[in-house]
Length: 79
Image (cartoon, rainbow, N blue to C red; front, side, top):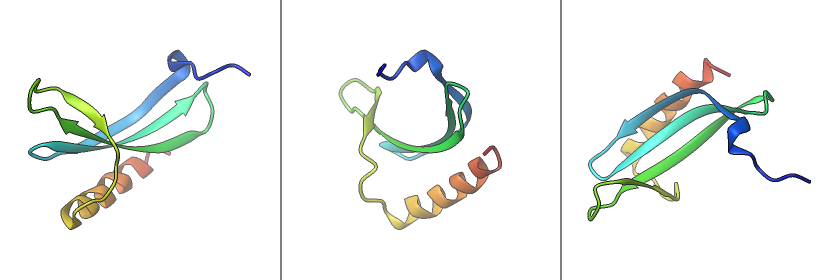
């Protein structure tokens, strides 16, 4: 069985909400022209380098939950 091939992963749509030191990203992805699926990601700002780094979605504040719901509704139109 072949492994994951990033070149076959296509981003159909993406939206995000940025906060001071983190951001939520909601995307619609399709792997190898397959079924479109919703992907939820979180990135954290590395204070030393100023670069965004992948992080666990983990626990969310109420504000983040409310924003995530809005982002998901927006993305749902692309499924």
